[in-house]
Image 1 (spheres, one colour):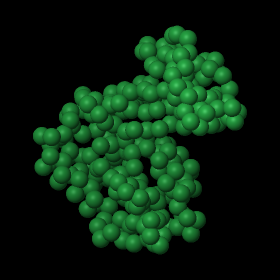
Image 2 (cartoon, rainbow, N blue to C red):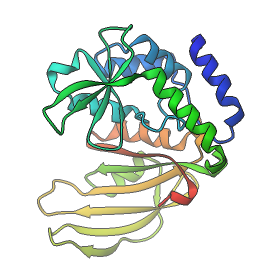
Image 3 (cartoon, rainbow, N blue to C red):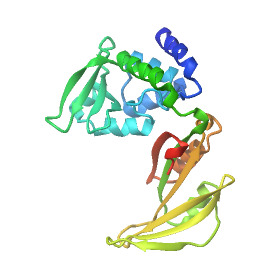
Length: 261
């Protein structure tokens, strides 16, 4: 671990019961860089190898690889060789790091809601981390314990029929479909339940006459400490990626159980 981030990890130790992070492995980082087509700044690479993207002590940072890739793809081509999106301040602005100069650790903002200009925000990546560390120390008593958090995602799959979906994730339909409603745009909604990895999960199907196949939705939650090799979510994600091209994972992040929908 880089010396700077080793010091930050030490600062986090007193709060480890309320802070979650999962470092990226080197091959995971390299795969992410290959998908972007750019090498990340050294200090950001060390951060990801030390704490990863799935962490909850720096609020603003993007928490999932797919979201970072989507944000990068959304950048205008003229900026893609120079900047990497790393955060969302909660509005329409995207926060960026410069990838052409390792000595420039300023955080920039792409003001896509105005003239589309990129401007420095007046603080560095390290200062962003320090701000969140200080907030953690001040608000520790109001933070949720890791044991009361869950990683929540929704799987969205366009599949030709239900058997193709169920067989791909080793699931079994538990009851017959029930039609729930028909929207004004003529989309028909159906619900059922399936047995998936030892739990009962609601499965929703949306249909429209103009679509080539139905769209299926289901939610899965798991404890943050399961995100490693034994993660059910990552296993299902891998299975669906192998089978379906029109598959999407909506990552709601690691949230307190009281906020789980």
